[in-house]
Image (cartoon, rainbow, N blue to C red; front, side):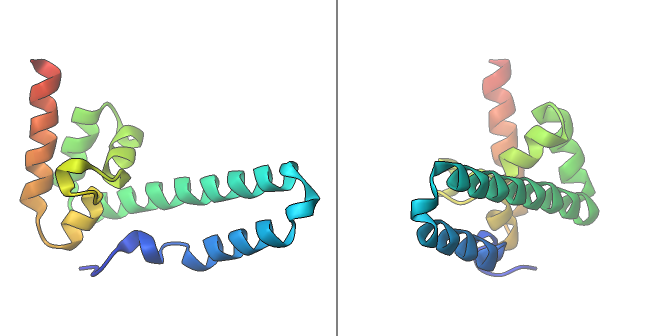
Length: 117
């Protein structure tokens, strides 16, 4: 089980390096900043997909239900990584890391109820 905020550790060094590169190259123009943002976005997308693959390996029932009910694995992966008010500003992965899988199932069910109402 992962402890703490998993997103604080994922790519921390890479994101710090990107920030330093942008500051150092402030005079280089906006195109370099755009490249850095695109690189960071691509890294985030890889992290989101990898996290969902890990979820599918460790909690296949939850991953399957999310994929079926969210409209595909891409949407399910995004939902899992999005910070949500229902989770006190945390993402679903953080709730799972805290050991509260039932809370994730309950929130998914609430979302389904609101969609079908």
